[in-house]
Amino acid sequence: SADVGESVDVAVIGGGQAGLATGYYLRRAGLVPVRDFVILDAEDRPGGAWQHMWDGLRLFSPASYSSLPGWMMPPWDDAALGFPPRDHVVDYLGRYEERYELHVRRPHGVTAVSREDSGDRLLVAADGADLSARFVVSATGTWTLPFWPTYPGAREFTGRQLHAAQYRRPEEFAGQRVVVVGGGNSGAQVLAEVSTVADTTWVTSRTPRFLPDDVDGRALFAAATARIEALRQGRDHAGVGGLGDVVMVASVREARDRGVLKAQPMFSRLTATGAGWLDGTTTAVDAIIWCTGFRPALRHLHPLHLRDRDGRLSVGGTSGTRADGEPRLFMVGYGDWTGPASATLLGVGRSARDTAADIVARLQR
Ligand code: FAD
Image (cartoon, rainbow, N blue to C red; front, side, top):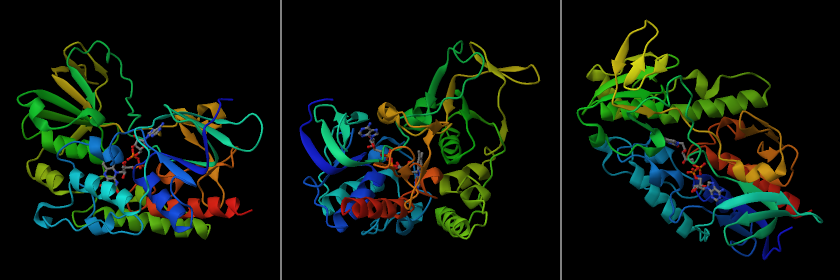
């Protein structure tokens, strides 16, 4: 095993909202940042994925419904413009980690988590700072693993292709023929922007479902909470999935009023210059923006050889986040499989709280 420098009780991998919320609860339980636990983050600045999202991105809930534990997100004073923008979130996360003196160590990308040959610790290899930990929390999010579906002819297409993760602003597509792929919030928001400067076509693999105008992220959170209750009582509950996908933020409502929010079925293939459709016709396309989501960024956990199903690990325990097959590893913030609404600013607090409580109880054994 690598000769290991530092040893800590807990290593948190990822300094986005999930890692910060976990750090908040570890500190509140009496663990001291740096001495007892470290948060390692691959970015060189605070903000997790938020710092990379497109310029026009808006939260799908108000600031008061987008807060991490302990400190409400400052109100977004320009309420007339709708929900808070990306930079308000990045600023909040940066101030949050200062407020709780979490001393996130960055940039430190963790390349591997493995079991120590002898003894009971996990080895965390991070560029230039290996350490050993009694417990590891993986809070690496999904942004670094965009999902690109494969379609026939994708390699032949000579136009521009990018994922929502690389999209920044609509101006780059002015006057072009652009296909936006994907019926979730990203697809709807990117289509809403790009359609103001380009000739857009929206394609989705299933018909998008829109939330009612007066329903926003708060309803998503309420549905996720109801699902937890239902599951606890052994009842089923569709959770967020039962509500619909797209929150009608201002830009999406405006796109609907312009009549562009109409999705059609996916193209069947791509050609060198465009898209081929089921009816045999083809249309010329200059650019394709794949708003087709992400997968959990778990490459660093491969040395633990844990069983995974479609890129997710099976988890359980009192927190619902402890990895089956490795009781010293916890997964926070990856979405419903690690706790309902856990991939949201408001929802991640619950699983961070339960994860920290489980770890602290084990440390005290
Ligand atoms: P991230 O923010 O991705 O943070 C993970 C951190 O871990 C990053 O800093 C990354 O660099 C680091 N990392 C990754 N791998 C490693 C490694 N191996 N070693 C060290 N560090 C590593 N949620 C809401 O509540 N409201 C919204 O309106 C909303 N809108 C969204 C819009 C979009 C387009 C997307 C994609 C998501 C949205 N979400 C929203 C969901 C969620 O809040 C965000 O995805 C959020 O970024 C998840 O936080 P996280 O901490 O889990 O992951």
